Length: 67
Image 1 (cartoon, rainbow, N blue to C red):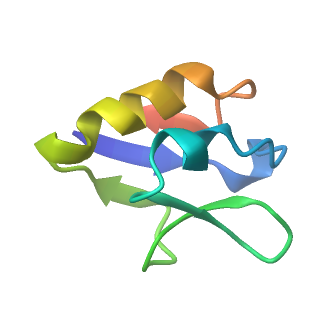
Image 2 (image 1 turned 90 degrees about the vertical axis):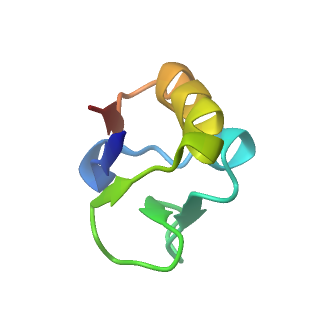
């Protein structure tokens, strides 16, 4: 599964990191980013898909996309 983040839509609510702390982190301004990369796209392993799916569903601004 491929996950994409849209930082411009992020309101820094923190729900994505609560759902998938192994995948999502925040910039100094509190905006979503992936851990260990500056890319806006990341392949998500099967092991982490449940947390990312939860983050996607709970994101109030749809700053997380899944393919």
